[in-house]
Length: 367
Image (cartoon, rainbow, N blue to C red):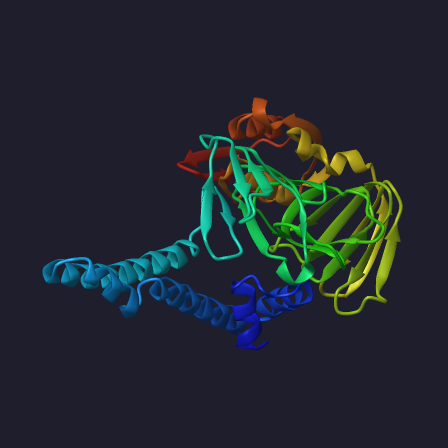
């Protein structure tokens, strides 16, 4: 991957194909990721300092007294250093899990989305509507030429959920602990690519000329218009795709011929280690229950339940009870009406155990 393509991406000049290739290259190794971050730092610093060139300072100083001109020169230097410090701070913050929903724009700027945000309109340079931002949802509009496609990235932390309406009309519900990379506006030509880490439910707008593709780990899910759920958390060696309606094709990114076609109420599981797909019949509504604010379990091992609770309520669970670890559970819980303590008390009725809660850490021990 050349530095030229990276700079094209940072300047919003990369094509959709170049953006896809760049994301794949970044995810290929830690070294590539570090190289990208270093170039991104350099680009940001250069962009900042370009706005305070010696020429621009001298023009201002003509209109000011000499003493003021000196202050202006120092001010320019200070702003560059301040920008560098802020940039370094932003990168250091990314090493710590955020407790807020973070929107990273294609130009490198980041926004925090909270419930206190007011409705906001986003316009392009021609005053055309690009997006409407709400406390719990962002809605995008319009299309651009493919060479102008710019990818945003939205990260939803543990304990929260969020909804996106993409510019083609596709609605995406994002579960806790999820990141989605998506075009601010889709291109007029080519495919509609998005990149998922975590879990999301897609209601894809129909467009036969522009297939919609969800890239998740080593698998890709291609559709024309349908409803389906994708679970691709980084700690799991699998990617699950469950179809509610329509049809989807799930394939290996590295080998498109390795694929499977799904019908409604089927789930395909991609296994990273074996490079194979496994399909089975399921109740699809069970796998999308989280979009309605419910946790649904059906013969689910406690180890998986614990992970779901951790993401949903933003807690850490340490289980030291060997008997509980082997148990499976079935049931439905409304998230808004239940606390972690409620859920633990329900589980205790089946398999007795003790637990302690210290801040956000829950330790489960023998009864």
